[in-house]
Image (cartoon, rainbow, N blue to C red; front, side):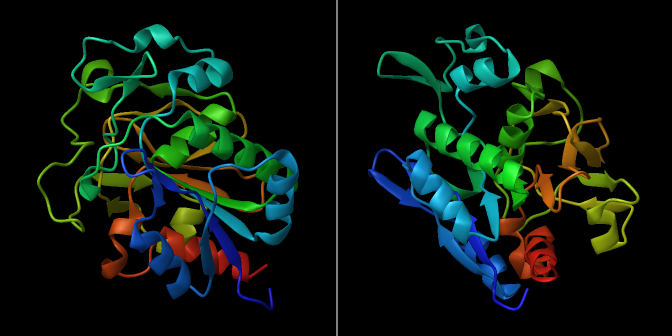
Length: 265
């Protein structure tokens, strides 16, 4: 690619401030690797979405709150009854139980579910897949990609898959590292890092349970939780459960590799 790749970054939503926002690390890592990041709008009709994809060379699906239970039911056949209205981590929004934002703990904001964001990202991912656009999912982004391809999730690791691995770090510096992951040989992550094991940060309570169609394992935690996946049948579709955007001061990571791979096409 002779030009600098244009990378769309899906927005984070703050309903209290009626605003879209972004963690600088996403943008900084993309620019460091030679790309041009642009935060995407929340609302696009189908023509606008396709017009946007005509311009983009890649998409980063960012972290954030849980995927709406209605979306899980639509794509993965899961039940919305798993939402407990008596749980202190839920709130009523427009008369429906909504899970409070938990996965972006290092940011210190609370966020309710965003069906609008779910709809945008599902449409982006499905159209991007059809066009074979390069895409990277991070934390929630990985879970969304998996659900879009018919995969399932662990909805709450502490209760459904308890282990000694700390998947949701608390009260640590933003760039702190937590548990290790084991990287699968002959995958993009292994080729980029040349490592069999790697420490990562971790801020999630949900995770991929069964891989969606077309995805293969790229890294796994010691307790068997999927930590990274990729689609060998596509040019560049990767996803990780950790938060590389918070680790950019530690040097190049998968966001850099993602942009560099696009540039090499």
